[in-house]
Length: 236
Image (tube, rainbow, N blue to C red):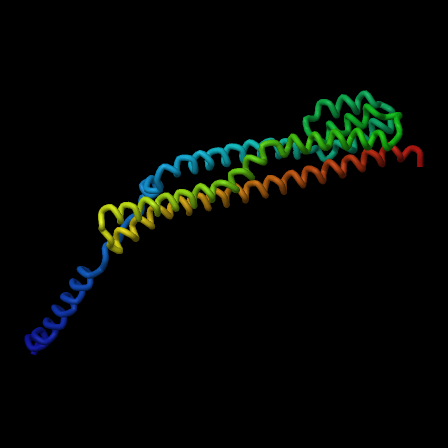
């Protein structure tokens, strides 16, 4: 009896094994993607795209460090300035403002220099200093704007050149197969994808830095208004 069941089950097992072998043989081989090889297939326009990426990364971190340094303001700064003004110790207030390396301190120092003059003149002087400080923070930001503007154009230009080269090769060689066409289009679209990615990164970085500058500008405006209130408070 055992021998009979062995004879019945063995053919089924062999059929299942055969089906597994057939399916394994018919399964397409997986292709691994080498990123560096993929980028090299993009053509010579990948070189300027790479340079644009390096420029965008460099100026993003350069501006980020400068803006964060400018926005690093001691919360007790204005309280100390107020105490020195109320105690009529203007020299100590100016010394503290000069030794504090941020835009708010430079604005307050300009206001301290103008104490005794009309409030309008003090506000105008501080406003001029504030404009200069904002310009310093925004310096080199147009580079990021330029990168996110021209990087996608370089990418599309590389794709167009690649397509022209592809159709020229088809015309001269007469080889018109779906594999050749798909392969050519696939490699030439790399420049478009790279240009769009670089442009997107530069755009996000540009807007992020602008948001950080706006936060610092708000701190400067708040400190300026508080300083004017301090000057007017003794006369109320």
